[in-house]
Image (cartoon, rainbow, N blue to C red; front, side, top):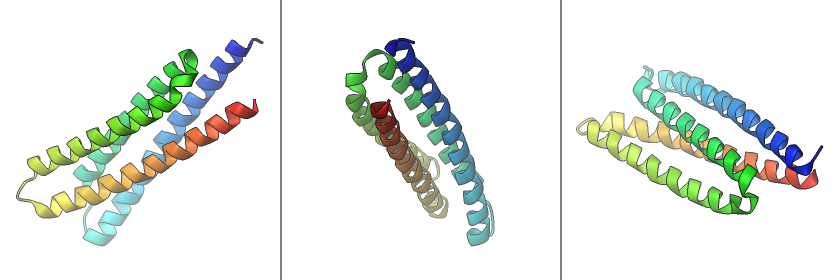
Length: 143
């Protein structure tokens, strides 16, 4: 087995693992958010939770697709990818929050709920991404 083929198999396996773990984590966050909002607010903050879940799924799937391409074609550019992806993700997150605030102007309670839910999803996924890719790079160096 050539080193190139071995690297490709590793990247494909990591992409599959990241996808499954991201889906699972977003599902857990969604369920926990529904339970917590129902318990704390007396109702499920459905719109806020759905927007947060969809944003993070789209961001995760887009990132892993780009990561796979860079990992297979230009490994030395991975640090640039991590930095630029983080920057793009935070800009898109800020835009999402601003659009929600604009759409819900006059409903400060809904905006506060959204901000809390969105930030919780965002930071959990940020920690997950950091952990996953540090683990991936360490595993790759060992092989």
